[in-house]
Length: 424
Image (cartoon, rainbow, N blue to C red):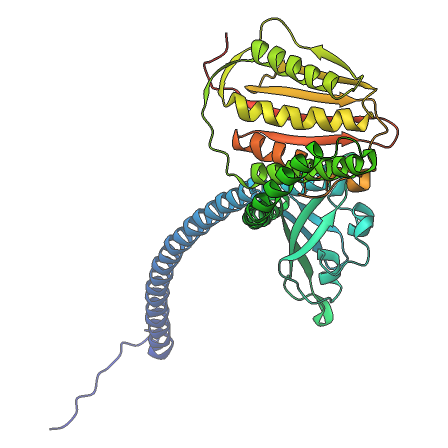
């Protein structure tokens, strides 16, 4: 089909279609780009919202963890502060960073004076000891339950069980610090010594009873024949003197045997109401009568009030214990000195009795051995008087101790518990 030709009126301008089509394409592309950007922005905004929510959850978890850690740290601080074990921690330079209350009490050093100070300045007396946090921080091998005796000025010596441990590594592989843990085992050691003493006393008691029974029968025969011989030698003074020596020695041996039996016998207390005032007067009166018969010229001073508490105790056992102590005091003064017996109730429900003499005193080095059976400072002593007295007093739940010094006399102090509710 033939193509028709279009005629354009003369004078009409020609239209340029190509720039318009380009512009249209640009507008479409821009629109598509805007749509894509809006879509990506919406996705980004949604992701941002999700991330914010996730971050908020993480922040909340961190806050809870921080709160829990803070609470745990507070609990740990309380535990470290109140535990009955001493704890000292030092850093790599040996500066004390932790010093708990028990460490302060045991070492006698206030915590403010120890914290943030060099260990060697706070505890100079432990210089060279390998069982310290400082030694461990400087490369010494950790120790476990090492026994150490600590002497504090003005206080009894304390026995410690010490353990050390290194903390995390510091620079160049060196220890980052160390911790020292120690406990007071003084009471435990005393208990072990007391158990050992009781076992020794039990063994000595069995041995003493056996020896006493073996000696008693032939000893009775010796005394009997010596007395019979004494009646037959009326005119021979030399023989009579020898017989007298035999009887004197036999009586001394008989006294020793009786003391052995008293010591070996397990006290079986018969507790009855004991009026201390009446009991003390009677005990001291009887002792003074015996001292006069022995020719002793001691002056016995009594110090107690007219009204004393009443307790349940075995009067015979306590009388024997007091007599043994008074006899020691009499012998310490050579039978011519002054002996004071003072008695007073204590606020802790115990009666305190003190027997003091003005004798020459005892060397402090042997004071602790006075309660050991057969240990004596006297030429004719048996070494059983104080040992038996201690056994009788401890059977009542009491305690006994000796205080003495050379040239200053001796005091034996013992406490007897009172029955609760028995005081007048």
